[in-house]
Image (cartoon, rainbow, N blue to C red; front, side):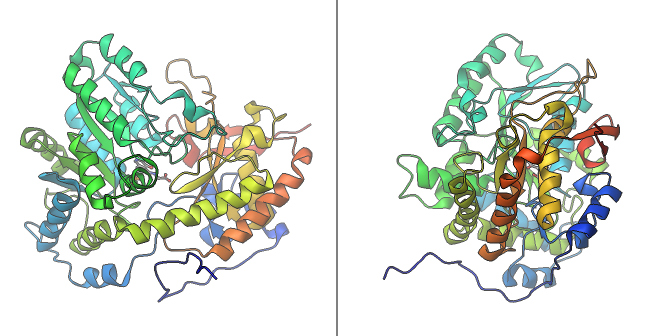
Length: 460
Ligand code: F0G
């Protein structure tokens, strides 16, 4: 008999979780104003809200925590992190920040001014938020294939170089401080960007003399997809692929809560000293001195160790195969999901799940609430609520894709949990024709509203 695939870790510490009853969940979700972010975590059985900061650290990471150097300046933990970043990404300069959006805040303070244009593949919501907060514009140049959830295309995170060139050609370079490539592209389904595409973006950027930064939260998962899908990379190690990827960038922002498998942390990597020095001022202002920037020494140690573990092939294979395990079960059952499966999550296509449902009543949010009611599972809406209103017209922006993201934390749940999630969503799918009414907004914030929005059921 062939031996089956199995996980590359065993479990040393556990945390109990509890199932609840449907009447309990009905009360809780109503109290939460139908916003899953407002639920208490103990009202959730399986939490697939995010893979950000929710991973399980290894025994080695925990032991690194004990070795943290908490000196204000020049801590050995800072140098450990610097060494890991240099070894894995190749960047000589870096600034620690408390998380990914803080890295965006610092970098953009140094680079972006009002009226600027920042092209890229679909920018993550905090990235877009930080761009629009500065009255600049994020231009989405993702390939069209990304918006067809059924099309089997290996690199749906790719940038359409023709769309990008049009943007670069039609604006003076002073208006385009940087291009941002998000690897993997979270907003279009955790989809990878190919090495060929990264190279092509670099060439265009050189031609128009524009900098390229990678939003690198899931860079290691991106490298896994390059290794397993792109011609010429099967024989290369993840670390070699990662080094090549970053060789085409001028720098990176990192939310270490994802591929560095820590609960908190981030950084900015730079190739050039000049920009690093300019950004350092903002780091000191917003985050802390440049040798800790919002992180404690122990957290920097765990992060450095996490960068090595996160770029290990066996770890990545376990992780990405678990995501695909859930995705394949759902796909086989007929549940419409983004395909190929992304690295960190399965994205359920809510418009195809509920084809007759009015998008004005927040179709993806409605599906996310139904899944919670069914099984106590917390997913997250990636749709109209997340897309915010157009800052100029004040109207809802209806994105092409209305998705429910089932985000799998790293090294946390077993495949039995995945079976449970599958069964719950299959049950909702079986009764999809009964789901006819959605929600209306009763309260919302002007930016990043999905975190705090309050909803009410639409009445007949
Ligand atoms: N960039 C990407 C691609 C992200 O996915 C995130 C966060 C950030 C930047 C911001 O990083 O949270 O550390 O400030 N994504 C989380 C998610 C929140 O659930 O996908 P952060």
